[in-house]
Image (cartoon, rainbow, N blue to C red; front, side):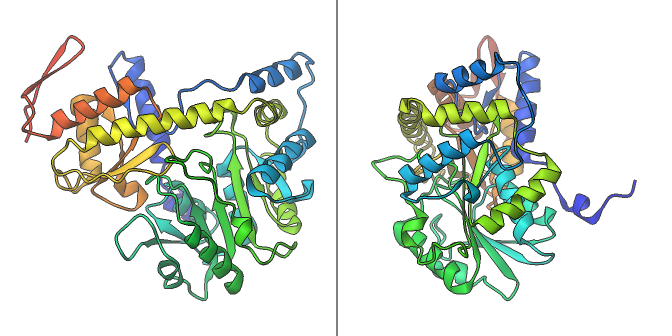
Length: 405
């Protein structure tokens, strides 16, 4: 079979593959614990459900505009004013089928073949392949000091004549690191001075801990005109626990939004009108569910970090936000794929190998599940790799005996 060069260069999404594997194992009745997921367990806000039901009852479920319905755009305008202190017009907004599509369409609108996109490492697994799908070149950047917190010099050293854009995801998936106000200020002004696009992937920006407050990139921008190359991405998937609704958006200059709309119009058309109405309902409704989720995640993080610190040799870095911690297991196994496979095969705990995020020897562990899943999952991992643990483990009525080294 003859496939395109782009098709041959793209790998399957490891996180989606894990979700499928977990579903298959659960269907078989296996006692699987999924610590690799990015889906909160809390219920979808009732305002979202009621808004969708009311529209569904009209039996008028039609095509939506390619850039989103007015009701959702108005909700995004209010959201941007409240959380970013920035007033924008409907023409500055495009609604997409998830934040992932908003990023993808933005990249398609700005990238020419062989142009480069810089992003800090560790990074969300999809960034490199999304850039490749546009014919671009991904340029991951590790912080020189070995931390999860880059500085502007780390970025500047990788800029070349081919650099077109920078992507910043803060708080970061997979590390949970929230970048400092100084770094956000520096990167906004640096991109302005170098005439680079800056894509701010803010999908987790309200899910932060320890009294931190969300940062608005607009605060540090000198150019807020229609020539600005600042693109802000967000959505309802994480903060409202609406992952299956697939509604995200981008805020940018009108000319870029027009180009993105043209592309999206030929790709998928507008997102489902029913799901857009649900998203608007969540954004316009009672907001207590976001804070409740944030508090639950902060408590879950504390439990997971406490459990991981009991491992001798595991280095753990308490996340500032998101659903994830990115723990260094290299003292036990430097090959993160090998370690992740061992945990699935031996104790039926799903994790995501750090190599998929740009750092081998690490595992991304999610704490967005229940406390029972977190505690039992970490206990299983400890039993599997820590040979100071008892040689036997019970999972339900099933007795396991460690027979590997």
